[in-house]
Image 1 (tube, helix red, strand yellow):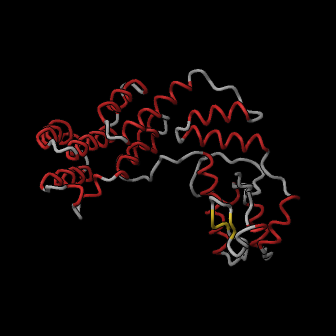
Image 2: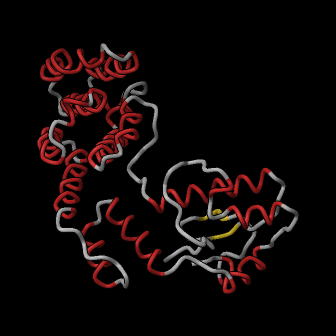
Image 3: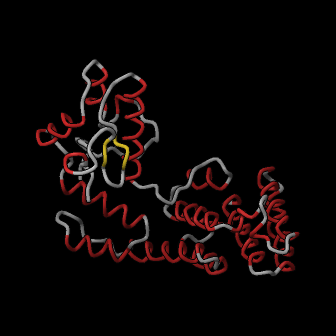
Length: 281
């Protein structure tokens, strides 16, 4: 399924809150904000007359999403079948495979393996990025706690994590919370600290490493020091969807009545029927 948003062209992912003058939705937003309300049936009826993104651009968006999420086999199959897509770069395929292997290793708790693969993907990365190394070693400690190896966890904390935590107070706080898990017979059931052993921590680290490997260094640094958001799903399609939600908020704050897209997965509009003309796919 493809959601046709009425975008005239694809905008580069430069900002999460772009100025209205620079967005592809700006013309529609400004015309609606000038006093023209729009009902869902009117919006849907007008779509055949609008200039939508070319199929080739939509295919590129989907291919970018599949690769970013690590679905390499699906991406290759789609690239063979879709029209207008370039031949995959030979150097990019092994790199993408390494990223997928690192992500899978982290999400499975195999941190030692992830460290080795990371050195293959970007040699010297951890040595130059203390915040990133701290997050990776902290997850290594958590995995030791998970399998009941407290002595090794203590050694890791003293030898690797403590020096890295001294530079930033927030790192020290995270280390203290992780170490507190050692006081519980069933650490995963701790109401205060059990979340450290949840799958969400693994996913967050996997996204953080993926951002660093892909060269999104500023994003990865912000994530590592707790100033950013989950990077795992950040691709051009994600940017356009966030741009859409931002534009809808701007219209709503201006008092404009319009068919608000509330179901991103099914392309369902607020106030529109749930079937037939109520969705746009």
